[in-house]
Image 1 (cartoon, rainbow, N blue to C red):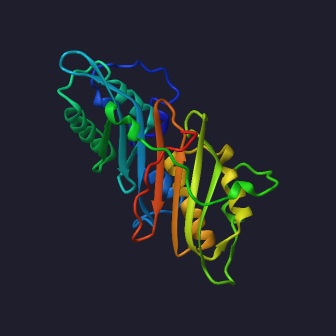
Image 2: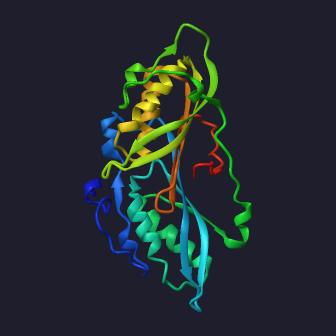
Image 3: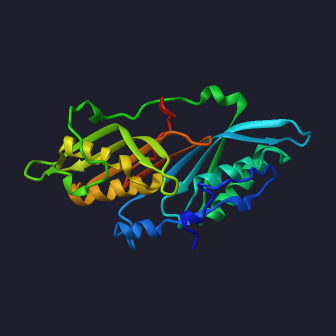
Length: 276
């Protein structure tokens, strides 16, 4: 089993510039899901949306090519892909000659699907279409407006509160104060999170304090979002729940996990926000 401490994280790495799919380091998702008591059928479905801004290769005449890539990794794939290994893998194309973008896309889909253990979808935006890449902020009521006192910086799900005595509500809530830390290196990961639900009204102060509680918590992006989803589902008992986080990029990659149990939910638009 590939464990996070065996990954390239926190270690000196040689940057290969020749195609090297063996650099990808998959990590089984189930270990962290076991910590959350998630076994058998998952209470959510979703996707991890990665955006790669440092993707380059050579055409057959040796001229550099560039593109922005979007990678969609299913949440039910057996493995997530460790982000530094992902970066090293993408850099291995830097001096690799390819017949064109389609050839690159085939290799990316093939290698990433093999690492994740499920079909990974890849979209390339070429240089002439960069102006079509749009930005936008997460929609919803801003939790950060609340003037609260905080003295805890580890997630405490038992502090989440909801009003079970009133009629259910449908709300979309947003915070830009999400910060967690890399599971291996402890380096900070900054993010914004959107929570959409239908059910007993969640106490907003308790939710904001809970989210700020990730500030000294060490976990990968995908694992944090699944923890948030699971804790809210158990403590507040919404009938429908979606948790979506947009994390700032590191090493030319941003990771944006989306988890939902809305049966008719559509994937988020992947609009890049101001901090990304």
